[in-house]
Image (cartoon, protein in one colour):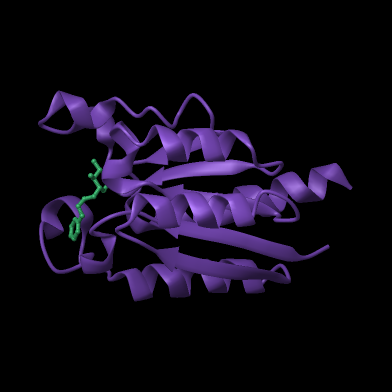
Length: 149
Ligand code: CA2
């Protein structure tokens, strides 16, 4: 079938691998991109991989992809907790959306990290499986598409 899967990353994830390795591991965002591309390519899908520190840019990318995508994988990072414009944009899309967190946001030291406002509008969530959560999310979207046919 094929198609494009949009993989979005929120603020500070451009620095992944540079600090807090006990929580986030040693992989960089370039490593994560390679994992997503390998998973998608094996099934004939494309990856559009992006990161931003700007909320409006994330909203624009989601709006632009609201029709025609196979799916969206999003690690909203700190946007997870308060970015209602992103939540509203995700409501507009017509494809599966998988929210990914590298860490398990439900077992972090700060209670606020467990309170994702995005979870109420996404298809599903993967949290705490390290960077492996990304290719697993890509795999889910490919599986969901195969069930549509
Ligand atoms: O576990 C995740 O993937 C998070 O979405 C990462 C976010 C954090 O605010 C969420 O609570 C959980 C971003 C963490 C800060 O970014 C980093 C950048 C470089 C190295 C480590 C973390």
